[in-house]
Amino acid sequence: MGGRLISPSTAAIYDVVFCVALMRSDSLMKWHLRFAHLHFQALRDLVRSGILSHVDADTNESCVVCSMMKSRWMSYKSTGTTRVARKGEKLMADVCYVGIKSAGGARLFLLVQDEATRYKWGTPLLHKGEAFGEVRCIIDHLIAEGYHVKQFASDQGAEFRNSRAREYLTSKGITQLFTNTYPPEENCLVEKSNGTILAKAFGYAVAVENVCPSRALVGITPFHAFHAQQPQVQMLHVWGCVAYIVPKVLRTNKLAAIRQPHLFMGIAKQQPGFRLLDLITGHVHEKRDVLFDESLTVKHDYVDQLLRKTAKSTLTPARSRSGSEGEVRPVKRVRFCLPEPEPEPDLTQTSAVGERHP
Image (tube, rainbow, N blue to C red; front, top):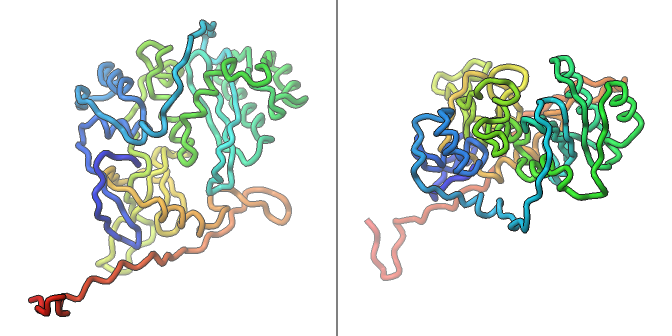
């Protein structure tokens, strides 16, 4: 989580080291973080359109993370392109290598985008062979919803250029389009999106991009263009902030804390609620009754230690001996021994000049 003002002091609760970021509740910076570092002009457009309310859009804000990570070379020219106008008519897909292994073992992600509305679908992948299976599920869902998919565009990767993909697309009456050897301009919409997807917050980043305004849509968001209704941005929170939930296990000690700290990871997939990482056990929960503190986050080295200590099969189903999927290996409770703080100086000892402190 980024922030303009970080306090030098930290607090240790449940052996978890927290960092504090101070921001006003109505500041544009807080919504900048909630929208996964969306640029400030787009946030001002959301304020003018009424999607965001009670936000001071006249302030000049700057984000250190964006200054370091979003620099781009200037373009020498812009070329005119022809885009389809009907939603669901043309889909574009690309597979990107993240380079950082997730807790579930995924190093790749698939990004599919509707060209007309810029609406996106995304999923992490263990290997490229899973890519077209996910694309097939998306196309089947769109056809069941009544959309007429006519074209599917991708690069010339083997995950899309194979007999299985060709037979399926032909059976559905879908034309398969390929780019040249590697010009990202021909598949530019989905290629550009790859640079904005966060490795550890992939699903949340895709959901946030769908509710961000697009210059091509003239004042509306991809979510509005695809679903014909305004998005509900109240579900957005600063990714990586601390959240508290009430555990299922009853307290054995009346003086114990009622809520336990978690890390906000995004929106729940299977039910209305939020996806949270338990900062004590490393388990991932989907809960609805959540109390957020967007001024707090956790030191990254503690989270790295938590993910390393937690079993790799926490987020992905493991294969049983018979070869069937669905069995999840148990994860042991993890305890951490963080470095102990340096001992405070003994004020009762004499000083260098021989005087004793009171």
